[in-house]
Length: 326
Length: 254
Image (cartoon, rainbow over all chains, first blue to last red; front, side, top):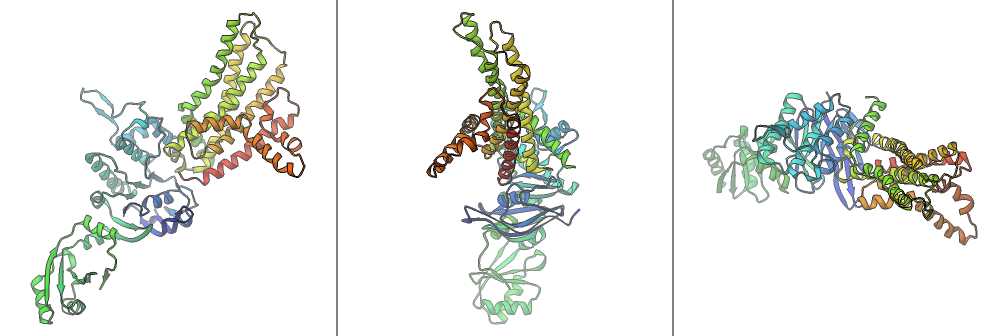
């Protein structure tokens, strides 16, 4: 298997004769077997990026490689399972017929069985109803047009899973699905990655779901991929830290770097200092104060922050302009 | 997976979709619905001679409705259904992708043209056995030839309609586009435009140049005056419109 399941280089896409630059020069590598969370605000370019990778849309510039194979513009790789924006379905067919169509396109040896398994994987299989009889969660013959958005979304996931794809591209796959069902599907994605080595690229606004399954993150803003980080790096960023206000911030940074070299000190745009200790532990407040006082620096404010992953992701998505590492 | 296997898979899926599509069922129902009032009128007349049903005329009407209009209506409708909720993505994200999607739809148009021709022939047989139906005495080979020409024209028109149906704009669009194209409106418009343009130069190119190239002209008469043109022209249209359909699909977002 290739080291990178997906590799893009300089990928760009504009709409309205260049008026809207939906994706700007995105160079991305998604490690094989990872669960890659793509996060960003509405209009950040996540869906367009996934469409370009899956060949549903033609790029203006740049290249896409899937599992080591470079794709021509608008070409798709059959090893992909795709759910982007809304499930691609025939509205006047029922769920099983939609799956059968996809199974026939893929040339699956036992399409009926594959469709039943895909339905089962997303919780739409035969269930024992209240009256003790087994039946499909929705009856055969019900048009997809007449399904609820949650049921349709489950069908979209089932379509993406059909044929055991090696890479799953899922755009808001849990939209409209009830909490229990969303948790089941989320765990299914993680299991597919863990047990079968499937690479999962998932975009979602529900960050609490992402932080449970993602091994890597990509953050998009204004069509550009602004940052990629691993789950470990994100966890580090979520370590407990001290917020300090001192009368001489620049000198305080220099003093702390010399006296307490293990600490990481960052100056925030409002001149507050953010101090964190290695391993995510809380820095010793007493020692810190003593060192600064000994250097003649007055501490005017000191507080402890314990951010969660979600808050950190939101901060990364929002961008905190002007923030710089020291 | 070899390209032929991939195409076979795409074709199986397209046939599966067609077997369940309302537009295809509609295309099957249309010639029967067209025939019904003719037979009712014929029965009502009871041989009094007010209404004369001619086999050849009715059969040509059946072919025009079933094969020329019906094939285009069925495949355009199927394409439109695929576009509605991005159902065609199932074919795009697969071996063969868009090219397979295009090829399978062009082949499906041919398959449907054959199926609808057979259906029209069956209905034609019903007409032939109705007592009191008149026969002009057209020789059987000639009937076969005009049937085959209509099959080719139906197939070619269907692919022309596919070109205009990319993007999917609903039932109304499908009906209007199919009707106008299979009735030769596209060719007439082209003729008018050229007539106006060349009229200024006092040169009339429409008769000499364009009329022999009009596909609709092939189904306007019973007589096959120029066999090469009657059989080759639809194939030229088929090839050209298939290429255009491919280009449009390759440039469309799924």
